[in-house]
Image 1: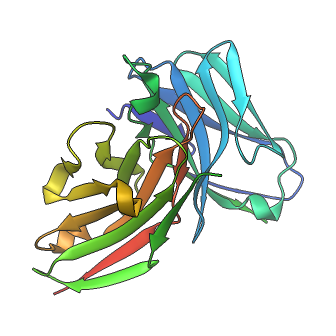
Image 2: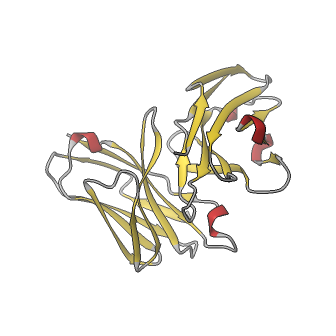
Length: 116
Length: 114
């Protein structure tokens, strides 16, 4: 089984709808991240969480919210979806390790979202 | 502000040829640098990383990268391309002052011709 799973893998929704993307991990990592990927722009950080009580905004958090329900679960919500939120969304996890700044991030397979 | 620049959004090589993917960074502090690979319809997978120590870093699948502080570069190379290397490659640097947040380059898509 995959260590980092994302559901759904594909989603089509309409402008104004609320949707939730879910991420679960079995790696036992404390840190979790949400990114979006747009063609030609690389990955940009939306939100991150270093434990269940810690939520932080990334560089492009407007229009998004998150919930860290447990160490293993981190959900991303679009309260009112708009077409420019059409993108590929990735969840990632990392361990604190002995020096958290150097730890590798492990990525889920992605959720492809289309907002009409 | 920190940034990562990948020269060439698309690189095409013949099977068996040298692969060279370029990455330059800007950082006011000693950087921690990463290369990730994304195969079609998959998430990102770590190829290699540089934190401290030896500047030539070996990764998976025969890839390696050399950290050159004087050139602020971390180029990715592989002596002989294989068809299975066709993918998108991302260079990334840990954001200064963060606890591990990554700043990604825009990616380079590698095509391998038979």
